[in-house]
Amino acid sequence: MRKVTGARGWARVVAVAAVAALGLTGCGSAGRSDLVSTRKEPVAVEAKLPVTLAVTPATGAKKLPVSTEIGTTVANGKVTDVALAVAGGGRVGGSLREDGTSWVPASPLKYGKTYTATVTATGPTGETTKQTTTFSTMSQPSREIGSGLYMFDGATYGVAMPVVAEFTPGIPAKDRAAVQKRMFVETNPPQPGTWHWIASGTQAYYRAPEYWKPGTTLSVRIGLEGIPLSNGRYGNQDWKAKAKIGERLEMKVDNATKQMSVYANNALVKTMPVSLGKKSTPSSSGTMVVMEKKAQTVFDTRDAPDPANRYVTDVQYAQRLTWGGEFIHAAPWSVSDQGKRNVSHGCVNVSTGNAKWLFDRTKIGDPVTVSGTDVRLDPGNGWTAWNMSWAEFVRGSAIPVPAELAGAGATTAN
View 1 (cartoon, rainbow, N blue to C red):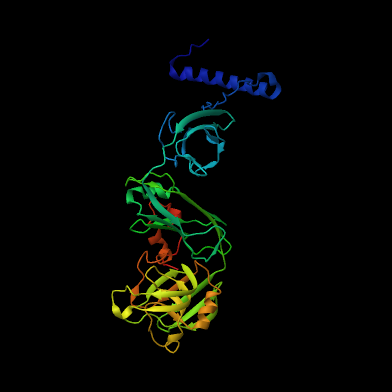
View 2: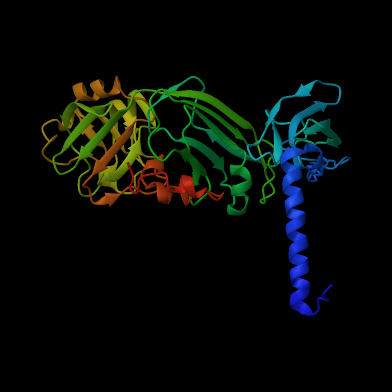
């Protein structure tokens, strides 16, 4: 037998052995199933993470505001039930915020009472965990802030009706985010929106990027009661209203033509001559909202600083547009001027017949746009929520507005 030496010889031997092994394996694979590998790959098993839950307020907390919410922090699950009960009483209704960070009682808690909250969280496979906390509320504070809501339950409003919350004195800037989080608006059908605070903090408006859709239902809660403010005051009460939006009716007044055009559902239905404010008392240009309607009233301006503008006059079919005293109203004394020249003290003068025709059709919340005068409408002089672009409006929110909502509106005011 010849002796095989060297690296090349060994390589040949190994190669022959490998071919033989391959040939055997190939034969067996074709004819014998018992030689097939039965080894199984390991199956990855995902670790089951426990549901964890923490709640606030802490057990034993005392003298809490009646605006207290049940805070929830959950890992590996979600909150599926919150049961809040007052000592000696029944269960308190409420709902979770959309982000799940807290549960909001449907009504303010009672002063000087003890409450127990039991929160249940559930994991993805049904496992649950519970946490319970007991706390008590403060006695009723002596210093409260005045407030109001310009919306009545069951009423029907125009498409430009903003939700208007009022505060006296105004809400300090540092408190507006906390207060805004307690101001809830639901719309059906759903329409996005946000709040805008006027500079003084005495009013906040809520509106959508565009006018409300006719037939919309607005459900509003200004959950102010018990909110602690930095000026040492507390919110005085909760305000609630559920209202409807009626047909779209708009009035557009052009100073150049001295005409008012009235549109119903975007169709022109009537044009009428007007007389606006004379040079010394000009009308404001901008988009306003009908705020108040009086079939019969008295204009008394005897306290006006300019003696030339002091008068007492009976007026019919008056519709307020600004806090400063601009109205649409019947002015039979200026019929000969209407459509030709401006002679009023800032109001929109129309004939008695046209004033009644308008009065019978308009609603609180209908928009009125005046254009072409020398004076711009001042922010806050009336419900001026629509007298700015959507981009300007969202800048008045005390809470950051999501990018998709901030970019949802038109670039100019309606």
